[in-house]
Image 1 (cartoon, rainbow, N blue to C red):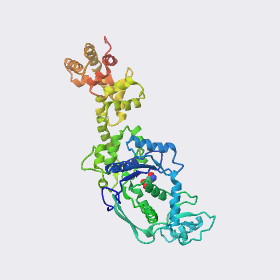
Image 2 (cartoon, helix red, strand yellow):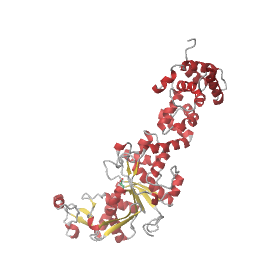
Image 3 (cartoon, rainbow, N blue to C red):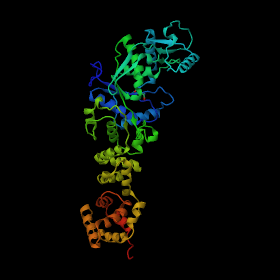
Image 4 (spheres, rainbow, N blue to C red):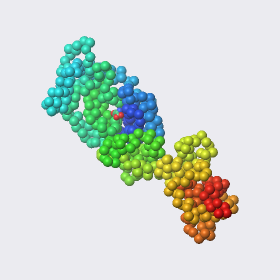
Length: 482
Ligand code: GLU
């Protein structure tokens, strides 16, 4: 099969993809998209999606930092297959591969001292040449005893490496431009380049789909595959797909100054639903005709690397919120009620949860995120007298108290407390007073909710119930006898 084959791995093996984050304290939004693409590619091809935690930076790889990745992935439904692999625990295996490469002449022990390396660097600088290390130890075998050494790859001097990248196209680098890169440090620990290759091989990874900031690394990693393939066979090149990074609205690589980059901020602070974020991330850099709202099943059926664009996409919070509004409207009322109850701090209060559930069909059409939904739900549980938002206060002035008095009298006579009956009564009060419906409905809304916007006013009356509605109206009407 050719490297441009669209359906399977280069050698016909079942597809295995992976997501390989380094713990940083959160799941980066770009990482989440990489994971999603890997998941969808694997699922589309009936393959396997693995997770590897690249925890070799011991200072950063704390349990909370790892948990942030795992919980973020679970929240987004990025369900990986099998147990996650921890890279640090595999250091002995990485070292063993490096020693195998030394034994077969594909790598060598390098005893260059720091001073010698510094001198090489200075010479390269003086000659205005990039530093490309070809150590004199490359061709020596008179290894000194008891001296520290690093293990370096014996990089090919001649020829070039071409990668048929599924996103970037055909990319070639001359071997002469590549370093004899370090595989094992002098303390025997593996470098990132070595660990990634050994782990991908051992996990059976056929397709490496990752950010295009790693494209340069692919040219350093391939010689390791090729050396091991020459030594023991069974180390075929993976298929590479380097996807463009996400940029901010100004076109620069997405970073903290553009706003949130960790997915938990989208969940906790911005009130985004996971399916909305998934859908948004999918569309960010991948397309299928004009489709915007794409379910996970559709995404699995449609996803392929040929739909991934080559140029970076810009993150657009407004678009994400539009999608989120769609998914809020589509979401189950009980689920939304639970999410709002949690935000209001009474997730253990079943009575209030069921009130929220009843109110949800009226509340959810207006909300772009869970914060708005929570804010809009607040009136249901507000204590009297309600605090009225500043923008709504003028609506309670002028004729409003008198109109509310008339409404109170009329509604007080209603016992059939449903939307049809209350609507008929409110309309007739407006007619009798010779004013438009809005002139009665707006003060009524403010009296009942403290806000200028709310669900339909007759729904609000029913949601609050007769006694509470009448009491809230009474709080703002002309005092009896005035
Ligand atoms: N651990 C690397 C990162 O978080 C990814 C390595 C890879 O995908 O090959 O950027």
